Length: 106
Image 1 (cartoon, rainbow, N blue to C red):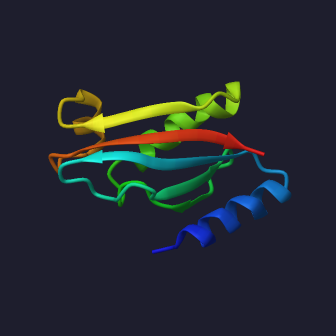
Image 2: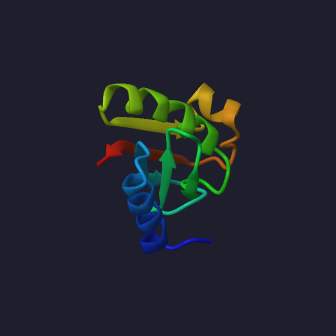
């Protein structure tokens, strides 16, 4: 598992290389959440990833949402949980809920 400094260093390197980079951060959790608040994942428009916001349950959905953030430059707040049909679709069946802030950096 990568620590926060490694994830931010990867994001900075990718940005320096000319990549469009987004940072996803778990900002809220409730119940049985796969990752704690503060967990991060960096993504590039070309598909590179470092870190994790859920241990694999929702990374694909976050990467899909990043496409909108790359296109618009606007941050998004993404919510996943047991009452969210999309969460079951992407595999968040742990019974908890988490909120992820997704923002373009650079």
